[in-house]
Image 1: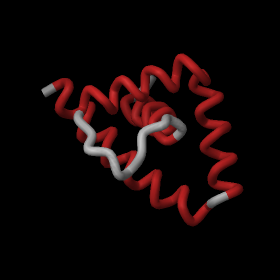
Image 2: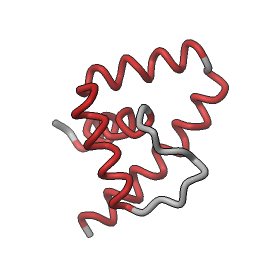
Image 3: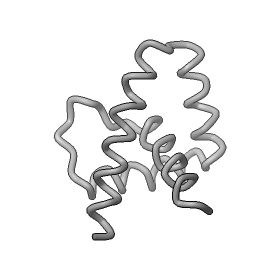
Image 4: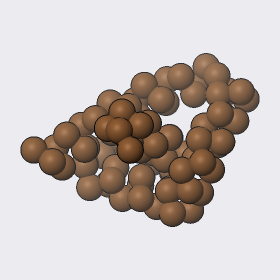
Length: 81
């Protein structure tokens, strides 16, 4: 799996998690939410749920995905530095 694809899978998993934008997140909380979402839905299930949200609520989904990508990049960069 390429690093870019792994980032996408992680972002989709965080997107469908119960984590909210209003939460003060640390890297451990982000990584735990990703792990739980992947276990619960699987990578394809997460992707399907993201697609559904973009179809149903594109205005809020775009904002959430931007936030999610920032959170993923920060959490996983810090995890391996």
